Length: 617
Ligand code: AGP
Image 1 (cartoon, rainbow, N blue to C red):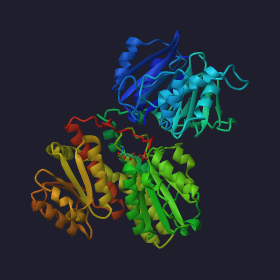
Image 2 (tube, protein in one colour; image 1 turned 60 degrees about the horizontal axis):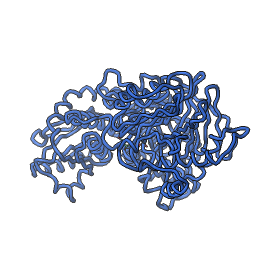
Image 3 (cartoon, helix red, strand yellow; image 1 turned 120 degrees about the vertical axis):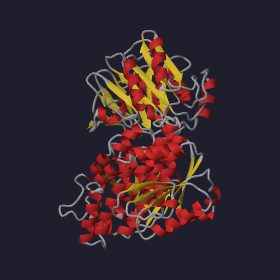
Image 4 (cartoon, rainbow, N blue to C red; image 1 turned 180 degrees about the vertical axis):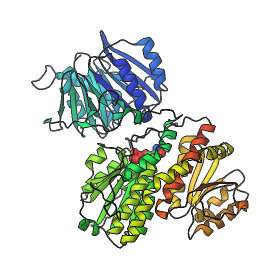
């Protein structure tokens, strides 16, 4: 949520900030702004709406400089107005600040600062912090040996903050110092030659440098043009680890695709291949994971797994539940991270906790991970966020290697999570009762996925036609049984997110217990059914919909025999093993929601009210 870019170096900062903000726009796009350290103080430009508005305003109305901060906002405190847009400059004009996170005690801060003569022009929590830094700055008289008066003021102000922050700050008296700090909201430093970029994620810096330092919670960084210094909460100097980002600029660009979402849907064969790369045993009968940090003996002692996460990743947890219970015979539970973190759920001592998160930064998932660790449980992560907070705090885990996912609606990250869930089921199964031959069969099935997804993607044009036909409906049901139930939930979520159509996912048979009341000619149902023992049962559920004049779109595997009169439209996916069916069935749902959203004229990559990575509670 919210994107931050700050820069200190030798270039004119404005283009660099704007380019970074465009790349971070998927984190928030209600409004944006920048502050340049100019000849006569801060040159501030702020606009509501998209970053493109800020580009225009900056061209007309800003001064140049080589130090600056900027922000793209996803509103938390205060409406979407220019005065609420960051940067916030303290009322004495000394401090300019951009902030990601939530300052919980800002009301008290504000009252206190008003008694000290500071004034406020916005409804935000952030403005209280810029004034608080200015207050401490005014009180502090001189530079110290190791730190500037500015740095000390920021540190003192942050010690009074309750809540979360990732910040970039400048002071009008310090043309050679840019300060950043984080607690609960991600912040990184891009390390260049004679220049440093502070940003909330790597996409903002990738065109300038691939050297990056991931700041930890409670760390502060001070940057000049020649050097930077990281300081811990305990005020000790930290030896920063400079990591290398392993993806290219093109990975984070749309290329010839109309939207990132479409590009990412089509990247799935490659992302799925990457999830498997180097992860099968030499005899191809099981999966291997280097980063779990648990021996096979320790894993055999696990008698329960608790999966937790949010949104689409939570749907991946539900699929993992079906797969692991079926193939490894280990009981699995799934919880929303936002609920788990505040519930005092009793966990058995042999329970293993797994979080799934594309970004590795979702605050509720991070909260659940920390709570599990606090209670002494082994907590692992499946994440696409290399170097993310969750990747660093988990006791071990599995990287997805799906490449950057920019579209707000998760697509390739989800199917790659399903692939890893299937591989984990195989690995845990082979540590228990799964035979060598069954293991070999499962590896074969998993390896066939990229090709089968490529085949499924060839139905793009047909799915587009179906989408156009259904684009004007206001309500949809998505129905599936067993592992297709979470796939149905995911189909409904995709449609809601990007086309603003009301959609609900249900277990197909559960429909009779309430949702059937919604069925009419005006409410189409999307069924997902694959060949297998319950296919006939799903057909019965379809009959029930048809009997009430409901329209039916059926996604089914090739060898299913479907009475033509039962469905209005059908999308056929390849026949395949049950373990990989959730992946194959997801792809048409992604395309369906994508093309419906496009037909309705929605902004697919930046759906209203949403942001890619939810780092506030
Ligand atoms: C997916 O389409 C959503 N935008 C959202 O539900 C997302 O999956 C959720 O916020 C969790 O994000 P994470 O995987 O980065 O933790």
